[in-house]
Amino acid sequence: KKLKNTILVIFGITGDLSKRKLLPALYNLERAGLLPEGFRIVGVSRKGTEPRDIIRMLKQSEAGKQADCPDICEKLEKILSIVDMKLDEGDTYAGLSRELSRIEAEAGRPLNRLFYLAIPASLFPKVTERLAEADLNMHENGICESRYLIEKPFGADLASAKKLISDLNERFGEERIFRIDHYLAKETVQNILSFRFSNPLFNGAWNNRHISHIMVTASESIGIEGRTAFYEGMGAMRDLVQSHLLQLLALATMEKPKTMEAAEIHREKEKILAAIRPPEPERMKEETVRAQYRTYRKETGIADSLTETYAAVRLSIDTPEWKGVPMFIRTGKALKEKVTEITVVFTEGGAESLTSARADAAGAEIKRNYLTLRIQPNEGIAVDLDIKKPGLDEATQAVQLDFCYRDAPGFEQIDAYARVLYDGMRGDRTLFATGDEVLACWRITEPVLRAWDSPDFPLHFYDNGSAGPEAADELIQKTGIAWFTDS
Ligand code: BG6
Image (cartoon, rainbow, N blue to C red; front, side, top):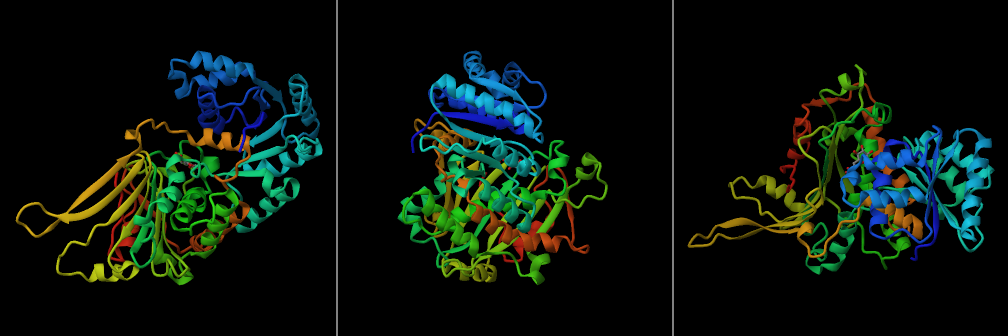
């Protein structure tokens, strides 16, 4: 898809997301020469902000450390304008409309409009309603169009997600809405499908006849970093599992799409998500764990908070290919290290060997055929194999084949948010979540959240900087296996 000339309108340009991700992403795009000729940015702010204030924010990020920062910042400042607006006041949208028309008059033609709603989800309905009233989204004239980039959370549960999705779709149409899941835009996540479907060596064995279980780990070393209003009541299940981690699991288990077109990829992803099952209601205590890091309550000042900063869950997939293969997901904050990985364990006998591995009391080491897709930070792929121990010995020993992206010739990682903006500009929906995917993810997480609401459901605690709660180790050990990360 071709890049078209675009005005990027950022709602919330002075906010946390803009500062940490969007401005640096724009910086990287400009630096790589990837912004289209005549590209313009309009920041919406209610604080009487000037373009130079925004550029100052950018300079405080990593970008400020680059040698070419002054040049790039100067260019960005020139293409940036700010519109003062109160998001809930209809009248002030006229100012935005005027600014967009002014830019188009200057360009001598209409331009694509990309609205980035980097604002709390509670404001989406109001803002989109106002945009519609001000005719700002009625820009379909065959030459250019309006698109909407929106950030999660897409709802707080299945019912609210349904409403949000149908309201926005009614207003703009699904094809204009780009729901961001920035994990999908990570290079290593995009590689999951390429790796699986270009390597018959693995793809031929990608099923329950050869795979005994899959583990997805996303641990973070940071806590909630003062974002209490965002995190309290959200928790790890909604924040990471419902979105990023179920997307990772879907990519790791979906069928090969007919083509690599966005629509075909989404079709297969939606199919597998619809087949992922949470634990049965009576198994919730055995197959899910919620926990909180020890200093959370003190840090937030909410002495009785039940919000989980750690979640672990055992899922299954109701398809012939994956019958009997448990899928384990865990994520948490304030843990020992930052690492996101997917490990696929190949065993003789596949799903059935989960039981035989446990029964192997002779002390023989379980064959290690672990394939680990290291999503971050040490991006790469590792395969643990057993080989004959060199020498006279008949025994086997574990060895590892290891590929690191950073060693690949010419490898330059495109930051996920740069990719999100770039794909938004060219209208490529492949790396965004469809409404049906989001709803399917809520269908999987909702029964777990409902079980966790019950007053007698345990909330475990874990030390900051630890590997997580013991209960999560027990959850997986019940099956005779253990968590694994390669890093
Ligand atoms: C966000 C979550 O979606 O992802 C944050 O809201 C989390 O809580 C972040 O810290 C992790 O992203 P990354 O790219 O640093 O792994």
